Image (cartoon, rainbow, N blue to C red; front, side):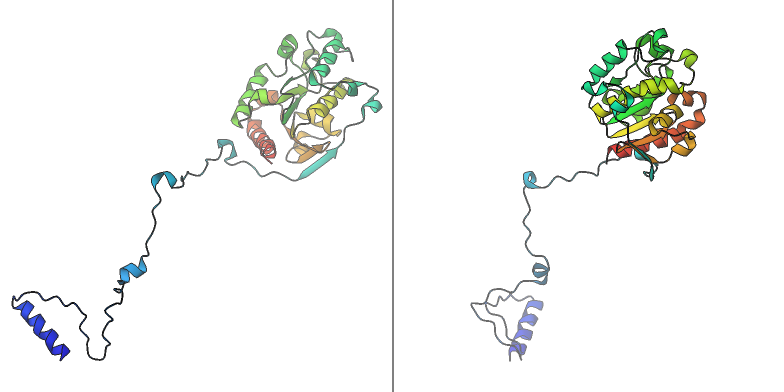
Length: 282
């Protein structure tokens, strides 16, 4: 009977009759009538999409783009394996009293006012070094040139200009590092330092490193590398390794002056410097 009544109502609507609204669901054969107090059934769309609370604009988390890596990291070589490990000699073994000097300025003043080898007599100025006394990166070259001797500052000639550019490229300002040399006085005609000159001057370097205690050392050139590591090896043998000086990582690379003579060494130097830069971030 219910089916016949529903067909009748549909025919009336199709024929233009008035719409009929049923207050109660029509029970089909085989089904149970709905309870008057039952809540209306949710549609499939409502079930599939539960209510979501939308946070006001001020409470929504800020989505930031990923940080861009510095340009110097592109193509940077991985940090290599370990090399030579050395410990500096005790000062009493060297016969000096530098341990009584407790600041970098005290060491610099001692260098300026003391003659420790034959080079001191002919110098215009001693070149103790310069930079941040709390530097994380410590740079060591061979010895002062003519411009450095005239000004009493390290790496201020053409090689210094190139070095400044290298430091800027790895995002390490020059004034944030400490720069010095194995020798604090200029050898005649910029010749290679003699063993006795190195032996007389290197205690100052040891004391500078003890006071500053940097995170990474960059030895620039074979003279600096051999003197600090106490070996006689080629630069090629010493590059590409992480040596340690008193437990501090030490990277060997070419001297900036050598890059002015041979630009082909700029690429390997750039790799060495980026290895040192990565060690700073560890």
